[in-house]
Every structure is written in structure tokens, then in C-alpha cells.
Image 1 (cartoon, rainbow, N blue to C red):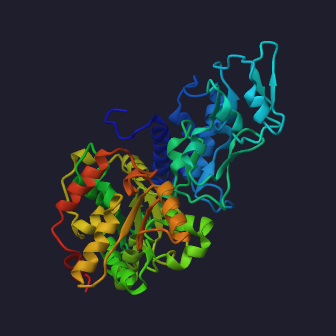
Image 2 (spheres, helix red, strand yellow):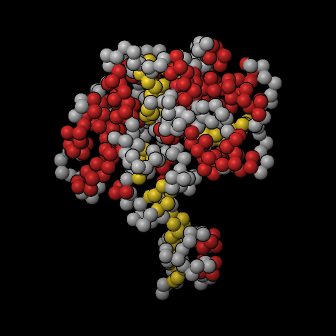
Image 3 (cartoon, one colour):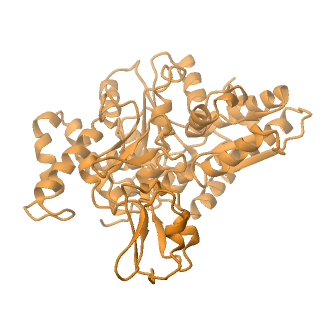
Length: 475
């Protein structure tokens, strides 16, 4: 790989598919060369990942389809590649070798379904056709010999949207899925992945060439400060312009706009949940629909800034680049669709650079400075709450903020349950579906605690020190 650009080899494989699809798209040769892409990625006749080269290339063909936009009949931006999802052991409760064949048989006594039987050595066995996964047998086993072996995707999905179908493959319940992409990052076989709209991005850029009225804006999420660690941020900005983007602007400026407006809304209503994380908002819609009136009426920073751009430049095209798979779903909402033309992840941006052989480490540095410290720290958990507090202060609003910053969807669930029962000691819920905040998004090149420090450092480097100073340039 040379320079290490990704956390995992699964990400690297996904990137190689995206890179080759993009390379052919730039050259207008995608349709005629599509069958050659698997051979480019896995040359020769020796499989590198699967049992045989035929299965390996069949899976690659499915990856190519998703890189080209995926199943148009499936509204979910997260898809399962069934043929790639067959290597995980059967999920559920199993008896391990720790079973000592004891005489107590407590597991049998507690099972109301008669799913536990014993062989001639008194070792327990679970009949999967009768087991309902209640877990009572595991609780009473004195040797902890019965364990629940969930698949990585099921462990990753905290909203319980993933089950195992009759073909032993993962299946996503779209009514529960919040499209956060946690399963995408955790699947060790890359069998669950997010649809790519990289072809839309390329088409938009190519159509802008030579069209002086038609400008393409790259709106980058503040979490970009913790990505592309092998290069400097200024070089990434130059690379975006070399790709064909006319202007690069910080989504953090939209965060400043939202912080100013949301602090006012909070003071007026007395209680609010944030609306910045689309996965969190979707979770409220699916699991706590009665709480929808409490969600901030502000659009997300992405949509807020894009709306402003298009109000000042009627011919603008806006492409959001960030760490979030749920942003791809947000961009399809009727309330957002007029403002965002495409969304891509940092993974896809890396593929785009390399598809045009742009080595960003060899480029000069351009400047990116549109936002304040407070807009930039939206990228990590707690940043939004800090920004709302600052918004109240700067606008001289007499309101005592009592925020709860929910780091991950499980903490969001706890806060929402408490609010539902009127026992939450807070008046503002900052909901972030990914642990760590946006810096933990599935579309990141790298994930880790060090990313938080990078975001804070990036925030301190902002020329605009207050939210008011940042949004003043828009007036």
C-alpha cells in the first residue's frame, strides 16, 4: 500500500473498486471496460481473499454495482452483498468446550422451549429450531459455558436493525436502520457497504468544465482535520481544486450558523434535541416518534450552508464531503434535496484523488478558513453543546443551558428514554450516533481517540474566534 491511508484492508479493497470505477468514468470508458475492473483489482488466476477466483470476482462485480450507485429499488444507502456474507459462524447462543457435563442441568431446567438436550457425556447441546435466544441458559450456567456469539454487524448495530436471513446472510430492516454505517466499518468481510454516488460527483465536475456560470462547491466537514494524516490539510484543499472544484468551503461555517440559530430556538422553547446528526434524527423518527416536535427545526450545518450558497449563487452545485454515510440519506430528503447535489465520504475522496493520479503530498498548500473554533469542534462529541453555550453568550440570551452530550447512539437512547419519562436533568440533548462524534463516522479513513485532539487543534487555528465573527461575513 505504500503510505498507509486506511485503518483496514477492507477499506482498502473498497477504495480500489471506487478508484477504478472513477478512473474509467473520467475517461468515459466505464461501460466498455466494466468487466475488466475485477481483473485489474485481482490480476491473474490465484484468489487472494476467497476460495476461488470466480467467487472473488463475482463479489467484486457486486462491489462495482454499489460503487455505481447500488440497487435503485432499495431506498437505504446501506446494502448487503449476500454472496460476500457467508463466512461468519452462525449467530446466537452456543455451548462451548467449557461445558463440563455437570449433573445439575440448570440450563435444561430454565429453558421453557425444551431446546437443551444432552449427549452420553452429559454435554449440553442447543436445538436452534427451538431456541428463541432468551439467554436464560447462559445466565444460570455455573461455568459460563454458554455464550452468545453475535456477528460483528449485529454487535455494531445498536438499534437492532440487522438479523440473519434463511441464507445465513445479514438482512437490514430499513424501518429500524438509521444508516449510520457502524455495520459497514465493523464487517470484517466488507459484506455490508454504503452506496457510492461518486459517478454523480464526476458527472457534475465534468459538466462544469468550460461553463463559467456553473460553479462546483466542495463543502468539507470539519472532521477532515483528522483525516489524510499523510499530508497537510492545505494540500488536500489544493487537491480538491485540482479535481475541478471551483471553491472549497467549510461545513463548519454552517455549524456556526446553526449554533447561533439553535441557541435562540432553545431559549424560546425551553427544551431541544439537536438536528445536526441525520442518524440521530432518524433514530428519533423510528424509535421515539412522539419526540419529533422536540427536534430542532434548524437544518443541519451541511444543508444550512448549502441553502445559503444557492441563495447567493443560483448556478451553484454543492457536494458535501465528510465521514458520514447517513449524510447520503439526508441529501435525499425533500427538505435537503434542493441544496445538496451529492455526498461523498473521505474514503471516496481518496479514491477520486488517486483515480486522477493526484498525489496530494506533492501539492502546495491552499487556505481553508471560513469558520470559528466553535463551528469546527462540531466534529467531535460535546462540540455542539459548547457551541450552543457560546451562541447564548454572544447573543446575550439569559438562559441556563443544561446539556447532555450523547456520545454514540446507546447514550442517545438512554437520554431519550429519560426524557420520555420526564426524569432527564437537562434541557438540551446533543445527539451523535457515532462514538466520538463525526470523527467516528464510517466513511473516515482513520478512526481513533487521536482524532479528537486533531479537531480541537484545528479549531484553535481558526482566524475567527467567535461565532458572530464567522457568520458576519455572510451578511
